[in-house]
Image (cartoon, rainbow, N blue to C red; front, side):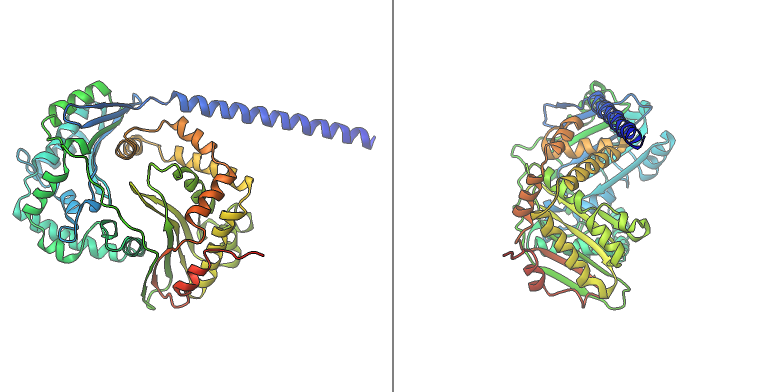
Length: 470
């Protein structure tokens, strides 16, 4: 009887495994079908070199924006901060619209106008109803071509930016990452902050802003991106009408090589309750073939926050150790890419006495990643990376942002099904190989702010970037 029951149980298990496999197979087919059915991103280049890229989902809302291949990396010591200053000046009125007129026009459409500056890009975008796309494109074109840059507005924004700098100083994560760039790329444009130093903000004038626009706001360095209820042919026509007169650059944009330096910066402040630490090695650029394996490795290390809980049930080794041994309050692995370089590392916040233990666990996990990472861990990381990739593209604005950034970085938008295949193709050996190439026995850059007395000195940190095995 027992044997019969056992036989039935085994048969049921086999059956359930079969059902599970069928479900998974159907689910995989559904995902693949969904990815293949996502509208294609259409790209058109105008005569002056400006690129128009869009994805038409037929939605009732749309996001359109101008992605410009210029940021703080395009600045020098004297004008550092001018790209961000220009972003502030964009909504302060043009030759045909006062600031009040501009604000009323946008509000009456029920639209949202926004902008941001990064180290390599400046972005102006609008979220609006599909029927208002022509007006939104015309406003964006007016902003980048005809901003008044009045002296009184410049003076007013100067004080706003100085106040913003004070607010950033209180955001310790921002401070740590600015210091990390400053030490990792010291003496190069990537080492500069996006906001710029106070002395530059106090001295930037109309001539600096005009020079920057005339030098970098060229048609060949601009992408008009659209997502949502956007007809590509109409967007191309609008681009021709409103941006067709933009001057094209004869020469391609030059990239100043930014040398990575293994080094550290520590700002000890015992008045702060927690230590904020970032450690990174040099990663790769957007177009490098190692980027996808490094993204998988980054996802494998993961992120964790004390409020999440999880304890022994966390999938990430580092998260499990952090929860069980109370190593930190939070940590976040990052893979920051630029055109020709990048920073791959981790940022964590911990109690002053836990700095050494946390760093030991981080570096142990990194060494394990290079030498002993398992098939199951890599599969989990790949699935999580694909999930995160899809979740991040929820809404017209993230899709529009993805289109603009990828056209600037790759000169095309990589289809999701291709990206999924590239992630699926990453093997355990690929992860180990990129680990040995970028992490193992490499000089890291370290940035630490707060009560960091217990953080090991740089030579100790450097000596833990490899294992000696008998």
